[in-house]
Image 1 (tube, helix red, strand yellow):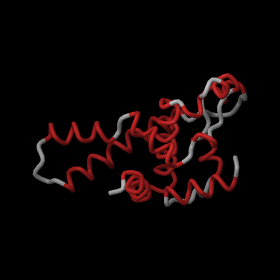
Image 2 (cartoon, rainbow, N blue to C red):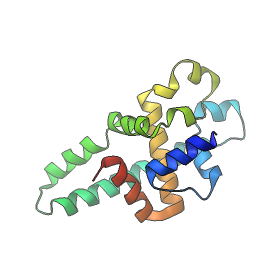
Image 3 (cartoon, rainbow, N blue to C red):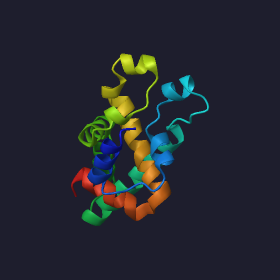
Image 4 (tube, rainbow, N blue to C red):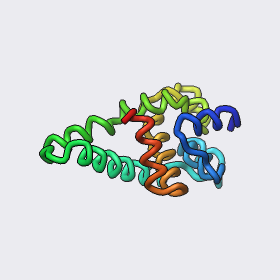
Length: 147
């Protein structure tokens, strides 16, 4: 990984990774892991990041509007965590160039594919949560969502 891009990513997130291997895993797509065993892909971190993101967003929405009905909160949360929005945040973070993709995925435009960018961002958020805890995650998401 390009160290300058990593530093810029950390600056934009407001979080410095202590374990560079955790970040590397978060940026490793399954296609790369398949071509480079025993590299681990980011699927488990993306699973964790998706859940953690939903928690932080739900908590923020309730705190922001304590009287809001559940239906409104659910719709608002869904709007904030769509794949398209996550992909836009990933583009804002310039995640594409940092992704470790398999040869075919890279050649077919994987670095700009919304689904890949969104899952990579979820994995990065999962890595922040694993390493830094809930408050570090809240801060990073707040920066992305501009709360």
